[in-house]
Image (cartoon, rainbow over all chains, first blue to last red; front, side, top):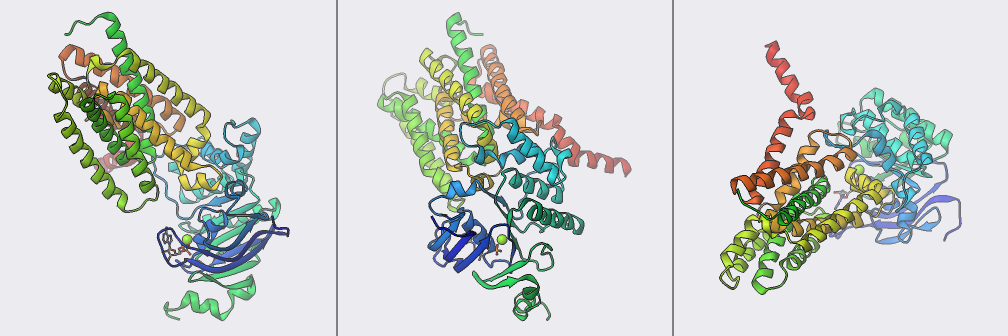
Length: 250
Length: 282
Ligand SMILES: Nc1ncnc2c1ncn2[C@@H]1O[C@H](COP(=O)(O)OP(=O)(O)O)[C@@H](O)[C@H]1O
Ligand SMILES: [Mg+2]
């Protein structure tokens, strides 16, 4: 156990994919306080997804130390995960997939409810509540494969919220969405962080969509954190211009 | 038409129903988890195992189960990693299993060799004994219990394995449970349907059910139902025509699948409709 106020606390973390030799993220140290809203940005292949999946223990780290809620990630993986909501990036669903939206939202809670237990009325209340929060309550009985990109993204967010997480990890929540859906998701993320005090870590390869409630930005490149600080300062710095606009005619 | 004593007839009918139930129930998971090629390989391993049992006078049911479990133990972890090699290994194991099966069949001792060999290739109405029936009933019961007890975990895993894992479900447990139950289902249905066709009984009814429903619960109800109906009609067809039972069952389940595709609301509402509209407009 580690006693401090950081809900996420990584020290010199290194993650290597199975069967590979070189680490994808190296020497990553990151502390996130409770209720913070941070954005991790960096070009494709920078290691952002890898970092998120190291935090919730989907990928084991090969060196360094990682704590979430003060618990060592490598030892308490499944316990930690029950309190982390995860929204996967670019996730395409088969249009014929045989699932109703409400069941998908409920599936976010399955781990938390625990084995050998059935979903109770309270669990369903939580499902309706999260679906209401993302404005998708009318879609409860619809099939998951027939949603638009934005609707699907909202259901995935509701799925993560139904878990009543303390931390929300979002991987490229704005990719493949049109402008108005992006705007809706942005408002939603602001509200979730603001009203529900959920620590939010969002990943994006696009500078232009960092929600307004997000005050801290972390820049990753080639597996390392190269900048970490206030949003306004980072987004106007020279380094960021070099990384994001290099070879793009600047 | 074959004349059968009534008790044998009842045993056989019940056997066919249970076989239809266990295979097409596992089909729901196998199809959704993209385990088709592993399942295919496992059913041929069970076939080779049964042949091995006949050759060495071990109970073919036990050797079939062992063969298909060993296959699951080899293929499960490889495919789980979603590595490229998994298809290569599956192709390799599949051909080895078929080759082994024919070699074993060739060495079955005694005079009845060719009859026995044919029976496990094509399946046989008379092959379901009282004990087989008991085991099939037991497996059916365990499967129902498994699904009722772990419905919420299974649904989460069927939707998306990584997401399920990320919300705290031990998905590996369910992945291997599906493989093992499939191994049991295949091995137990082998004698009735035959080693070459048992896999169709896993895939066809499920694929038919997938044409109609968007609700996972309904698929879990209708897939086994279609499996049972296929087996019953197939059984009847085999009785009146003398077709091999396995072939009859598979033909019936394939016909149901074809009808399902034609009637499928999922397909009609999609491209088909638009295509017709465009045609009219032109
Ligand atoms: N399963 C994997 N096995 C091996 N390498 C991987 C795997 N997934 C991602 N990588 C590599 O890790 C690097 C970082 O990937 P990722 O974390 O997905 O980047 P980002 O999310 O920032 O685009 C990439 O170079 C990618 O090729
Ligand atoms: Mg990524």
